[in-house]
Amino acid sequence: MLKVSGLTKRFGGVVAANEVNLEVRGGEILAVIGPNGAGKSTLLNLLSGLTRPDAGRIEFLGLEITHSVPEVRTWRGLGRAFQIVQPFHEMTVRENLMVGALYGKPGTSLATAQKVVQQVLELTGLSAKADTEAGELTLLEDKRLELARALSTQPKLLLLDEVMAGLRPAEAMEAVELVKRIRASGVTVLFIEHLMPVVRALADRVVVMDYGQVIAEGPYDAVAANARVREAYLGRSA
Ligand code: ADP
Ligand code: MG
Image 1: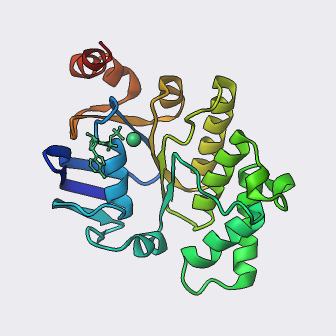
Image 2: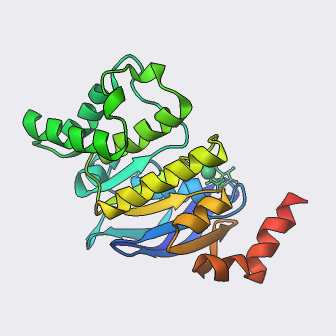
């Protein structure tokens, strides 16, 4: 579904992405983990087009998108949710989702957008809050709305950057169930997460980054037992 090769991004002397090679397979839930500053958010920004790479190539559904602007990637089916949620606070939940549904795919009719929004409200458990202003939601509802806003653009691949940050463990597990429902609805998921119980519960496959490079890849248990991965985490918590 997604193929990344040799992807490189420098910020001054920092190589935030260093010749990253990565594949996302249709239907999977892939986790990207790594210590603070490893380059995870940079990778997501490169994939969604918010950051331009210095080198490398990104292919999505067989087409090169390396230099496409973010909205073209959205139209092609690449959705993105952020760690810092920024809904339109003075608009209702439904109105926020209508924006995504109408602009996420060019030429979407009002009727189609309303149908998409209804489905997304149900999937994310926000139906009862549809007419509440986004600024009045709780933190957990904020997170759901952030996922819902990304889903309203009808993505084939959903990119999530630490969307569970700040949630209590029980709330995070609720969010885990939601991501599972999203995948069951036919959306492939690539997520960044630092809560290991969440990674273990969700990921079919885990990619580990450190200093801008992919240092390990595989099922959770194999990656968690990997000596280089343990060193990357322990080496920096000291
Ligand atoms: P992670 O998400 O894994 O914590 P980031 O991708 O945010 O890591 O950052 C990787 C490295 O790139 C860090 O050293 C960070 O300071 C640097 N970096 C990220 N974005 C910028 C930027 N816009 N300008 C300068 N340095 C940046
Ligand atoms: Mg980050």
